[in-house]
Length: 369
Ligand SMILES: Cc1cc2nc3c(=O)[nH]c(=O)nc-3n(C[C@H](O)[C@H](O)[C@H](O)COP(=O)(O)O)c2cc1C
Image 1 (cartoon, protein in one colour):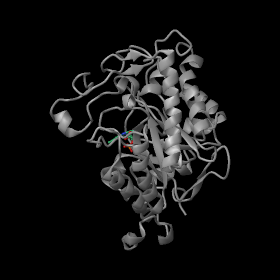
Image 2 (cartoon, protein in one colour):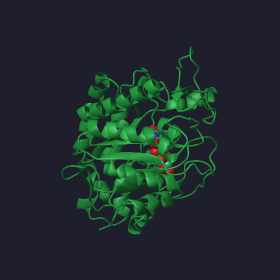
Image 3 (cartoon, protein in one colour):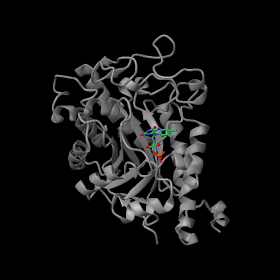
Image 4 (cartoon, helix red, strand yellow):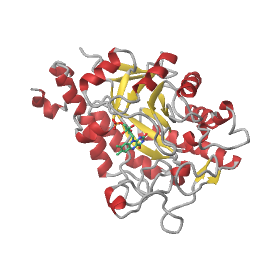
């Protein structure tokens, strides 16, 4: 049996944890498809996530789902700030479960990267990229600092009241995620969005308790974790997605990520997914597995946690190798799963898994051969 298709349990502070049928994880991917602009997921989200559940993923993550309307990247993002959204997510979660996959939600606040045009060809083709202005469908954005480092409209600095209101919103979103039936919450702390804006010296120029030293820049995330962990049931795993590196000398570095992951584990975060970058121009490497070494550093520092690697992990043998060498416990698959929703089931056949262990939907079982 391959490592990739060896079941695993994602630990939680209380209880047995969450059993996953295999170690393939659908990476969170924005769909920019809420054309009603109300954050309510619909048939597209059911079909998109449902197809990847039938395709065999062990854990299916939603796209970045906003904890407040103001925290949306675009006005076509999904949300989880009201009960109508909970009711719309619940049947999607139920379908994912019916296919043998676990359901995770990525909770997100875009901060100073909110209020942008949806990243879809029709907008890009019309040259509608970057900030959507207030008055033309956009809204005021908030961040740690009034910085232009994000390459977008300069956001408003968050006051202490804004910070405490946002922390309540993270907790309420976690409560709602539980009500919708999700198994895992992943806090989006990557890609230059609000939490990363606090973590990184590139975007955080505050001189109060939330800026300056490592201790101060990580304070917001520590408070978010504590609030979410107390709202989210202790028997359910809590995860974080980090940008492990800004790939800039004076930015947020892998040493910071490793240090913080160990602290987060003590606060009840049992899983980490390690991506990179998101603030300003990209200075990092590219190519197959270009972020695996970042995941490996976190895995080495917090061996008890469940760590996933992400980024151009496209081939089954490549994924297997990452796990066999101990660099990570699982793999998050993004674009390869857009190309092929059955990526895990096909990977199982490539790795010569027996049919019983090949996660094709029952209806597709004859595709095993
Ligand atoms: C269409 C698309 C949407 C994405 N949206 C998100 C998102 O909502 N949240 C997130 O953390 N990353 C997002 N990403 C990044 C992916 O999760 C992943 O980290 C990245 O694509 C690298 O993995 P890959 O090479 O397997 O695609 C998105 C990527 C794509 C292609």
